Image 1 (cartoon, rainbow, N blue to C red):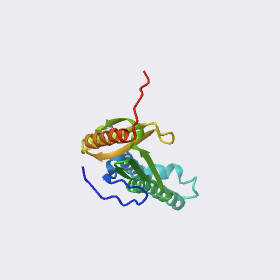
Image 2: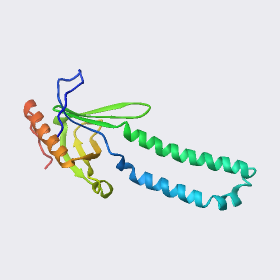
Image 3: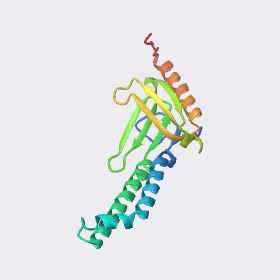
Amino acid sequence: MEAGKGSNAATDSNVIWKGTPTHWVNLQIYVAYVVVIVMLTALQGEFSRYFSGLFGGQENFNIAYGLFYIALTAGVAFRTLENHMNSYELTNEVFREQYGVLNRVVEETELYRVADSTTYRPFHLMIFGYGNVILSSTDRSSPITVIKGIRDTEEVRKKIRELCQEMRRKRGIVEIGNY
């Protein structure tokens, strides 16, 4: 666990852990992008023969084909930027996630509200040492929070669990199960 100093003046809590998701979470998108680009490049001659008439000639077809390449690349670049702009912060009182490219959103989950935590390590993340932590809470606005693509998932989950129990003790909250 990396300890840090809190910079948020709105709370008196200390930053316990900070993280960002790895770009490996977009591995499927990157692979699909490469496959589509390779296929489009290989089949450009065939597509040109059949569809250039629809575009009013070979030159217009090439422009449309180029614009399609640009649109695909822009989509992948936006997903990469979206992932890059995502950040997580764990304090001794709240878990905070910030995300969004054009519109920034900050979601906070009070730790005393977290009911359950799960570690999920899909194969494409696990082989690179990453995973996800899933938090279930009684928070109505975001009952499920997924901390995607982070290292040391089990350590982070355990730290969250410890902090949740500590916050419940401080507030005198006793969990009543649905039995």
